[in-house]
Amino acid sequence: MNILMEKKEFSEAVYKVARFAERRSQSLQALSSILIIAGNDGIKMRATNLETGVDLKISGKCVSDGVVAIPAMVLQQIAGSITQEGSITLEHTGDTVSIISGTGKSLIKTVPYDDFPSIPFPENPKNRIVIKGALIKNLFTSIASCASSSTVRPELSSIYMSIEGSVLTAVATDSFRLAEKKIPLSNKGTQGKFLIPAKNALDIAQALPDDDIIMSFDDNQCAFVATQGMFVSRLTNAVYPDYRQIIPKESIVDAVILRKDFENALKRTTIFSDSFQKIRISLNPKKNSLSLFAKNAEIGESSETVSANVSGSALDLSFNHRYLSAVLSLTTSESISLTAAGIGRPLIIKGVGDTSLMYLVSPMNQ
Image 1 (cartoon, rainbow, N blue to C red):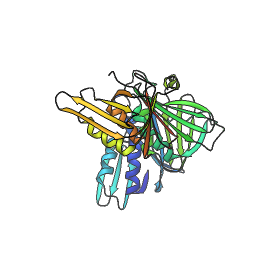
Image 2 (cartoon, one colour):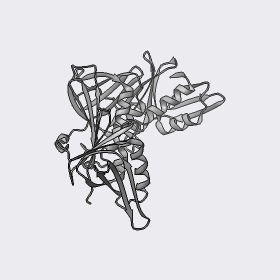
Image 3 (spheres, rainbow, N blue to C red):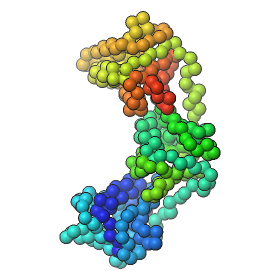
Image 4 (cartoon, rainbow, N blue to C red):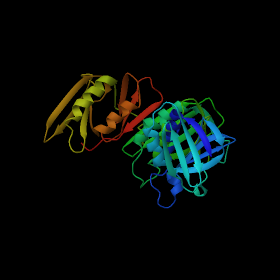
């Protein structure tokens, strides 16, 4: 095999593909490698850790055909060490591959590529929609942090994706807070639902292009196909909890506050939160105000009061401040609304004018 690529193209492709390779695989070297294929279809790079996989097309000149597997970590280090200008040549002979860049030449031992597993693709082509990659990227990166980091309950460490009518809904929860985001679709035929591991979704989000992609899925995997290539993830085989049951259907107090005021008050108050990261929110309809309070026996205490449009009954609730601040990255609305159903009941936060988001956070013991 002999191929020629632009250095920038090579580096960007290596960084995208390497995140799908196994960091360290004691049982199968191919899983920690990048497979480079040169042939009639051009130049491709592939990688998989059996959880996720990628098949990426790369611009370049194919002088002679061939297939080679190279340790991903080595390719990453080389990609990070070369300049972004000029071209780079890969020549494969025997069990080594030469990477020539300018006056420099690296000789790398290859990995047997016969052991490289195939990258599965969803079998049912009917379950597919066309959507902007930028929307999926934003969807995954915004709510993935709300999924559980524990693997004890795999359904909670996944993102629930549901297509009903012409709306794509994504949900993530760790049982303490929950984020739901909706995207309108032009496709009205496909209906279905699946669970994608949150960590897989983040890896795919980092590699997806912004333009149109085809998202398809079956019972075992989902794929995101772009003109540049394909990104695949296995799906979680579990039942997602009926999260709609925990959403309060009534409220005793509602408040609307400027996002900036809430964010600034929250930042100052959290400095004084205790070891449980607890702060108290007080909603006062008589004074049309929202107050934040935190107390730490070792540092001191802080109270912040800001103007808000409050209606209903006065209410005090305590929360983990990290869960409150998380909503600020989910919406760009200038104002946010807070709706509470009472003591011990979840608080619902939305961006005013942003119908795509619903964020729910459970209170702590007072």
